Amino acid sequence: MVRSKRLRGCTITTLQDNEPQSDRDDLSPTLNPTSLENQPSIEPEPSEENSQVQESTNIEDDDTLEIIDEQDNLKKKRGLTRAKDVWNLPSGQRIKVDWNKFGQPIKKGGGILGCWLGMVARRGNMCPIHYISWKVMPIVPFKLDIVKMTRSKFFLPRDDKIETWVLKSVGRKWKDYKHELKSKYKTANRTQEEIASDVPPEIVPQQWIDLVRNWFSERNENLSRIGRASRASHTTPHTTGSKSFARKRYEFEEENNREPGRIEFFCSNS
Image (cartoon, rainbow, N blue to C red; front, side):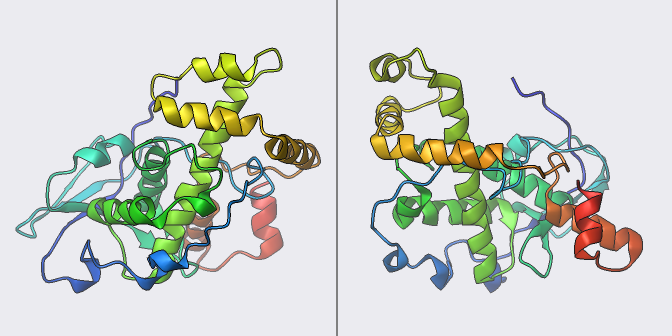
């Protein structure tokens, strides 16, 4: 069981009706349903070469909470807030997230966002696991609902690349979650029927059956071999723990009043 770490240090801002940029139902053209490519595909298992280690459900405990209520009253406190508490934010309050010039979340608000999206990726009603790849996950309703839900909990700039990042992050965490399930349940001495009948309590049964069927497909087995070979040759893993490169980069810039060089930043995280 993952041990919970306490978290402080996010900014919560009130949802204002006169802020057009934060209208929860106003989604950018990035999520036009017609943009989805419907050709089936199977993505290889997550590889450390292609993604960083997923941020944990909770992040480190420091800094203060800034809360703005519906009357625009600002209150600072050293509260105890975890990523799962985002689901129960009072109506009209959202966590403010800062972004760097690359469209990546930073600071504590960004850490909470990343952790919370990891929870979203594990919810079968929002991210069904039986789809063979994130690419073919329907925009309507799933991806649209993810963006709407995220904007209802976090104060995000009205920018296409922000929504693109949100969906990319959920997609990566969704693949990691499926790989985690496969590593735990698909062992050499178990048949497809045995695994399919062993439905985890948090999984929708029919989604599980379809997922297991995909694991045993010939194409998936081939991609698994490719993924294992790729990971075996990887020698430079991500070593910043639950903290993303974007947040580490921001901390470097704050401490040194300059951007890090490529080699310098690589060495500091190796």
